[in-house]
Length: 341
Ligand SMILES: [Zn+2]
Image (cartoon, rainbow, N blue to C red; front, side, top):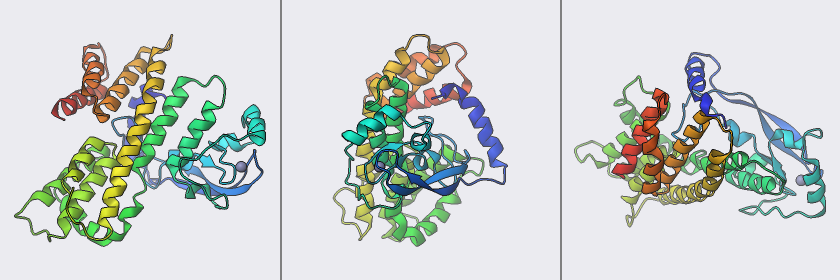
């Protein structure tokens, strides 16, 4: 993880905003599994962007699909999982592949149909969970790699809201109402969080002309918007206002989907913590990277509801000389959210 490069990355995002190439583009490729020789399809990315900005745990959002979700492939037949290079003859981990041919301890978190034609049809978090298992089977894996893959598994829970599709038309109507009140110069994370707040306001405003049936939908949209930027405590707070209410068909499923995603993201964030701690404690690590890792741990503890630990990590960061202004603002924001929540 190269957190210290966040500054230039943000600059790059600004450049991409003015570029005509704004969507992630992919190419479907035929893959032969190095373990079981099964042939299946997968996606390889050709171009991407940073148009959606960064979540507070440094996750980049791209328009048109997230590269990290596309790039983790699983063979539906034997569950061997890796990034594209792990499927190439010259780069695949040979010892591990020989071992898996004889004995395969990989267990998917949810059942996988071995006849699936496309790796994409396996939920991203199930693929990433298998990637964690694959890494753990290899000797001497750096804590940083395990931290990264656990974080990615958690972050898959922010994307792919197919449960909302049936509400698309009504969603558009609500979106227009919300959109009108968002300052036009906000972008990425800030814009989406501002939208979430507006959805909540809209749902609560008794004087608005919103149809009664659209009020719970507005709450759900707020929660999805918070969740999709990794702000799970806000998503949980918003959605809790619907507890015990009878919801229309389909909406209850979205609520359950949000709750399941919040629970799942928590599991993997919690598991990432010891690896991030080990990474931060590694000898010779660059000071800026350690600062970023402490900040990240602070964010995770806040999201896990461990406020004392979060503040213990975040508050000392403000004492560091020369902490980049952007990061300082994020730290202050995290402290305020931790104290307010
Ligand atoms: Zn296979």
